[in-house]
Length: 302
Image (cartoon, rainbow, N blue to C red; front, side, top):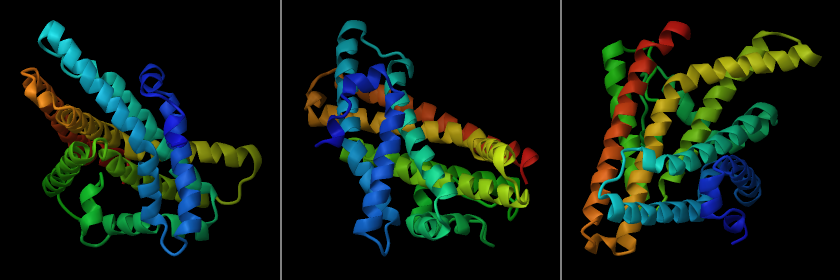
């Protein structure tokens, strides 16, 4: 109960940037525990332990959000689209950023033998992305943000596959949040680790290509490579990941209402409609992200 008592739901709302620190700490502790408890295959254990640490806070945040939504409905009869949930969105966003930062640092700066063990499943998934078929295979692929090797197929085929896979992720985010309260954090943690491996690999490749640098030159090279890596994956990744955040909020709010038996309240149907609005907005973000990934990203990154 120690980790879940570090920050309260109210504090998470008022200072969402604190969730960056929590996300970083949760994933760092998970890596250490998984390495020593499951030394033969700690990869997925890192994601489970990270999720386990984050789950209590996020469930409480979503429960508070549902209560506030019900109270606002009794006054205004309708919730403003998106705006009323931006604080919860930022909680998820900052925590995801903390996961991502921790995973990237570990992937780039820790010994290759350690990295290979900790991120074995993620590395395998990334390799499947750039495989000769160009398509994801297996259950791990269905909860990953990227879906295709654009060099292997046409733009139309790529767009179709990306949309299908990304909507699968959104569906999982909804179901996980509905069934487990804030269960979508598992999918978000997994995607953070996948993104970290992809970005970290690009940074390592560019640093290796620059040859033997030292001192400020090496530091500058890391910043340059990190910037290129961030642009390469976050241009389309931001709308896609944001869509999953909104999906997680939509499923979590309905889940909290059902648990509290608020479905007996006539206002519950307004909550459902509000969640449908969030899902529709998330779907729009996924379409935008896919169009960027197929039409814009390849123009700057081959």
